[in-house]
Length: 153
Image 1 (cartoon, one colour):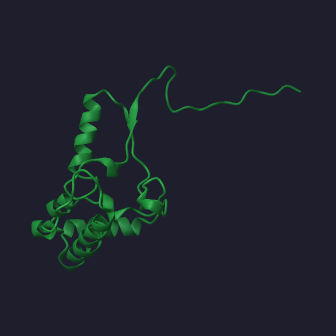
Image 2 (image 1 turned 90 degrees about the vertical axis):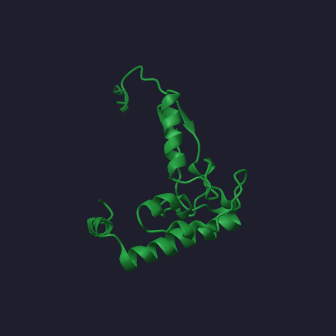
Image 3 (image 1 turned 120 degrees about the vertical axis):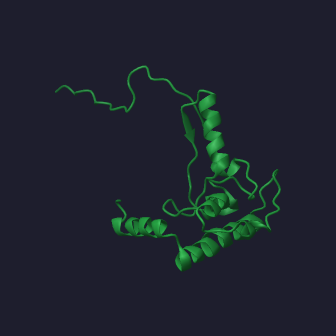
């Protein structure tokens, strides 16, 4: 009896070559204590493109677990509120600039004991409270549609 060779499927054409960078988003610079999905991440993507890079591996995005390591998330299904960018929430009308006034973080090291409650207060408490109380109609309808679409989208 002869064994047939396994068929190997690849998403790339033969002789495809690319390069990229492995860097967690929390390693990017930010005036909000820890790298996040804001302008720093967008600028990083632009620099990768300028450098001819094709890929950016930045996962996982779950809440940091033991030792605040982003590579040991508490869940693979939950989001990490530390990655929320306050500037984007201000632009969306969910935060006011003075909500971020007590922000005096180091740009050299991450102070998790200060960053975690700061980001949680801004994103999950203040921004959500503003959304629930007076949220923009366009955001409310998009949110309702998202909730109704279920887990499979």
